[in-house]
Length: 250
Image (cartoon, rainbow, N blue to C red; front, top):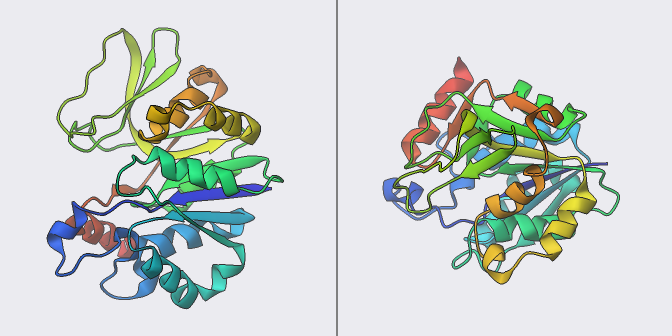
């Protein structure tokens, strides 16, 4: 059984600097609800998975209403989960809440951050891969927005991210460095659940990289499928979203 987790609980503070009224970023659209990030993500993956877990928090009632009214065709595969710490914990707690409700029958879990726009072919490669998946993209690695991925001298992966969007640092030799595509696949759900059970309170309150690093940090690059995303936008702002939507018509 294939499960998909999408996390959309964040408060969209950078995105809402460009809007007239505060919105939940994944619900934003300018032409049709079908062009919202949540609708685009779900429909690109829908036929490839058996269940879709969406973790919300900020403006949760708006999320429930949107999925119920604008995404009726996919409701039967959807599970909505509320993250009651969306305002004071990091992104890791949303991933934790999603993992908690994934079906016990799931034998693989794909995880996608909810503010991404990507091409259909790339997400198909991730979901249909027979291996654990790390994704990368072709964007420049900028400290104010990138989640950087590097492989150390022994070819084990490490993620670095600055929550203050200031500077990134690597304190050891490395063989490769990438901008993370922020999509992953876990082929061992039991191990993911075990990792979540032993997180410290500080780790639970941190970013989703706490869980991701613990899981993927045990594998060398040769054991992973590293999928390069062909078309990728991280929609931190309305301008980012508009650039992404332009790509639909190309």
